[in-house]
Image 1: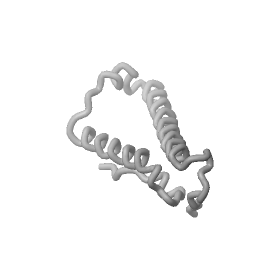
Image 2: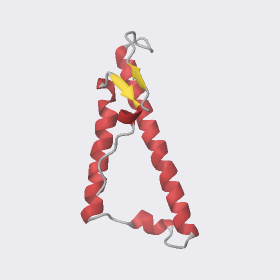
Image 3: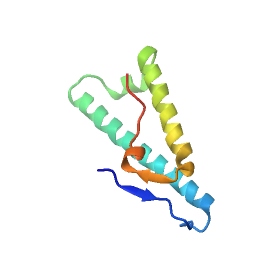
Image 4: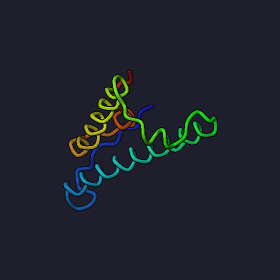
Length: 102
């Protein structure tokens, strides 16, 4: 069930522009934490299973399909973060949108 919150008529921080910047900052922090959590977990599991080590991950240069997927994900992230100030409604579905994988 999606929970929707309407944008307040009066700016929370006193000015609409400050609210917009705060929304962008919050979106960035959420994305950053999700990514750091997933990457750290993934690296830990891969090392535990002796599949690879973190040096291999650090030195990997994506090409082909993985490079295209990363580009799509980057573009979706930019749209979500840079577009945050222009949203008039917020719900869990709109906040969780990701680029299609594959």
